[in-house]
Amino acid sequence: MDQMSPAELFPHVRIVMGMIVGLGITRLLMTVAGLIQHPHRSRISAIHLLWIASILVELILFWWWEFALFRLEHWTFAITLFLILYAVTLFLLAALLSPDNIAEYAGYEDFFLKRRLWFFGLFAATFALDTVDSLIKGEAYWDRFGADYYIQVPLGLILCAVAIRSADRRVHLVAVLLHLAYQAYWIGRFFYTVN
Image (cartoon, rainbow, N blue to C red; front, top):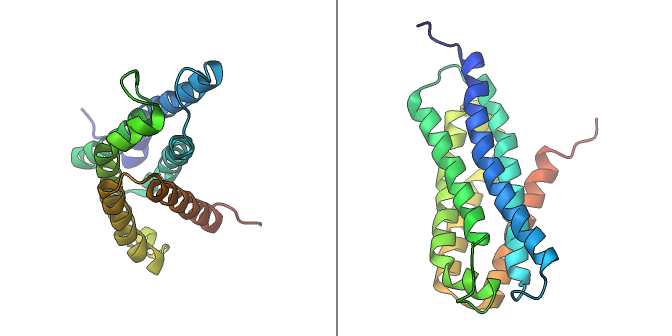
């Protein structure tokens, strides 16, 4: 069997990643739809809704950033497996925000706060995964982020450590607002340019 070129392999890998990202987006949107359809079934939480928005943006950004892999000159099974693992981690974050049943909890915020170790543990993993992902894409890709990238990973990990340790809703509100501001910064810096 002939070896596929990177340009031929990339769309196949992207389809698998897209399916996993699509499942995460579906879970988040179904949760929002459920809240709209049955607003009094469970207590709605601003923290929960803001994290839904943030992880929705994170899934979309992941899908978009992976376009840079089109330039990758050498594909391996390990790279493919890594990318799928990264996508699965993001899906699991979406799934933790979209539980099948919260009957034994006092609402979405109670569920979120009681599952914060899992959520922020996985969230911390995304900072490490993103670093590896950027290294895979090459030095030129890494360099375009500048010093900001050296700051974001340690701060993200600190944010996760604080959020794991604290059940204070104010801490979690600040954490999600900081992450949304961080996402807005990167979107503004790399995607909102006037030609």
